[in-house]
Length: 297
Image (cartoon, rainbow, N blue to C red; front, side, top):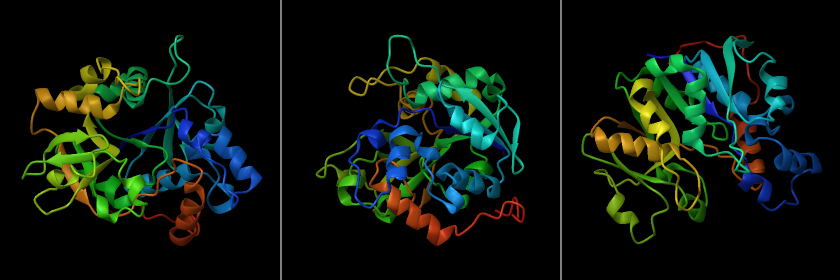
C-alpha cells in the first residue's frame, strides 16, 4: 500500500471560464468560476472549496502525502492549505505544492502528462514509489481511492460504469471510453467514440466503461513516458492517458481496471456548480476532520 496522492490542479479551467453564466448562480459564484481554479470554487459548508471534500475522502481512504500541482499564479491554494512550499499540515494530511510552469511560447499549461511530469521532477522520490494521481475537479469516493491505494498491482485505474454517472447523455458522450480484456487489464482509452461505435466497446458484462482520470502508478514505470509524451495534434497538450497508453504498448497487461458503479461529481462548467452544491449538501452536511475514523477502509 502507498500513501501518496498527486492532485492535478494547475489547468487553465478554460471550459469553466468560457461557459455561459446561469441565472441561478450568485454574482460571487460567477466571479469565482471566472477567476479561481475549479477545485477552489466555494461550494460546501462555510464556503469551503470542492478540494476540501476530495482531501477529506483521501484522508478517509488512508492517504497521507498530498502533492497539489498548481499553476504559477496560484497563491490562493496556499491561503487554504498552507503557505510553505512543502510539508504543510492540513488536518493531519501533509500538503506539498508542485508548480506546473508554462513554457514561454505558450499561453496555457501543457496538459495533464506535463503536470505530472513536472511534479515528479520536483519530487524525484516519487519516481521510486507508488502514487495515485487524479483531477482536482472530480469528487472521487473514499472506496474508489482506497481500492487504488490498497491494490497490490503496480498500475491500475478505476473503470466506471457509464450508466452509473448522473450526467446528461450529451455530457457522458464526451467521456473517454476504456476497453479491457477478460482479465480486466486495460487495452485502450478511446476519446469521444461515436454513438454507433459504443456497442463494440462494451465489456464482457455488457457495460461501457469510462475513465475519469484517476490512476495508481508505479513511478519508475511511467517516468520516461511522461518525459517523452507526444503532443496531442488537436488539443495541443501532453495528456496523461497518452503516456499511459504508450507505456501499455511496450508493457501489455500491466494496467488493471478496477470496475465501479457510482456517480462522480464533476465540476467542468458553470452549469455544474448547482448540481455539485446539492450533492455536497446531501452527502456532506459537514466535515468532521477531528473525529474521522482514519484507515477504516
